[in-house]
Image (cartoon, rainbow, N blue to C red; front, side, top):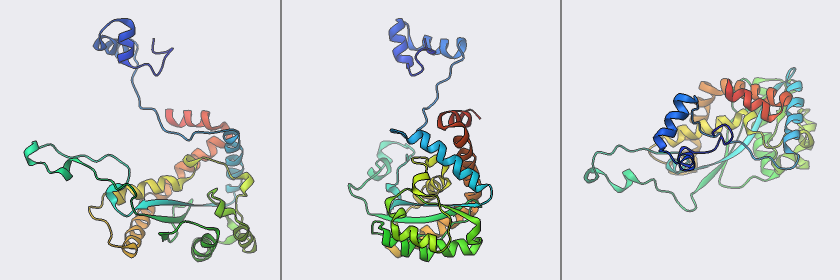
Length: 274
């Protein structure tokens, strides 16, 4: 009954078979050896995104056999750590001893957020962060991210001709003024036509963001202003890169290679089973 319907719940199966839920659970575990597992989130691919992802990642992997991979990305972080997504817990010591704020996790309708840009190389080194209340534009990306932060970051750890830059697919990253400047500086980058869409699992910086945000969410108080947030985030991102940067990039690089050669579905099946 479960093999034909892998998403059939115990409750629905019990109702269909006219027996108790406990009996179905016992049969499922003891007789059939079936265990329930949580479904994993994954990107929803549309049109030709899935084959493009495979082709694009395979090309990137081949190039990075002789090049050092550098990835950049942007994310938004609320200034209030408690407003980051994620479950919060409290210990129930009796209703008379609990305050409202112990039980409820407050959330603003329009929380104040900061835009963060950073670059990460395959060794786990992280660039200086660009943090702002503004949205990203091509001019800001060129001046604040590429000129002031990416190029100095590359030169600090590598030579220009030994890296492959994999930008995010945001339109501002491929504006003419940006690609022209990168070409003038002889920075090899993944072209827009070859940039694989919707593959966060193969971009280590996505896991890096998640860990930085988790650490930030553990703070009990929010920074007083933008300058305070910059100091806090700078410390968290550098420490996260030092602790986990290399392992996060290694794991994503493995996924990059497997999707590039096996395709998304087969690769993720192997990774989930390993």
